[in-house]
Image (cartoon, rainbow, N blue to C red; front, side):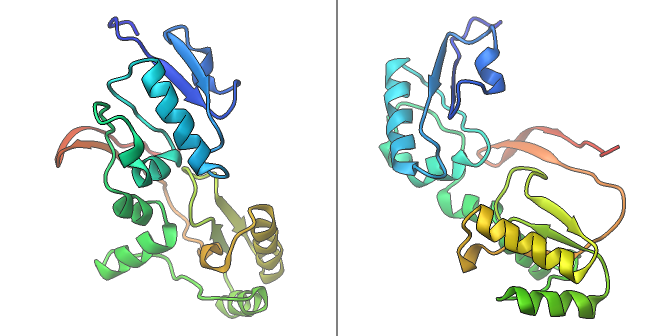
Length: 202
């Protein structure tokens, strides 16, 4: 906005942080991308045309949906996203854990389970605290900690009910690893890294 570019903000609520920015020239509310993906895309297409956008930067989980329906967006709009299949892989903690293990990158032991009874028994055998992770989620929003088998089962049942998770999306349960947390965020454009930062969690 300070550079003279017109910036429009979209969110599924009128109360998102970006909606309050003084640098925006337009504000829109779209359908929830998780529960109404087709309606969400229709809204996005309409807003892109309405504000004559040339560049669209999706944030958080809606990027996967935008990539899936990319062919419906106006052809003249730049959307800096990888292909749908790669984003699905990158946004699934179970798949990325398997990929890391296949690449000989150390990952915490993962507990295989199909029923919460199996899960409780496996956590009891492990005898250590665990981390319960939603397979899809932004940052640490879908990460929870449990110290006992009973706590693990209760937490997992709650997540399954709360998010109406099908079996193929049941939470990932891993041994909890203690240590210093670091993160790496990178921005690539056609294979070239053009920006990055590495935060340490204090």
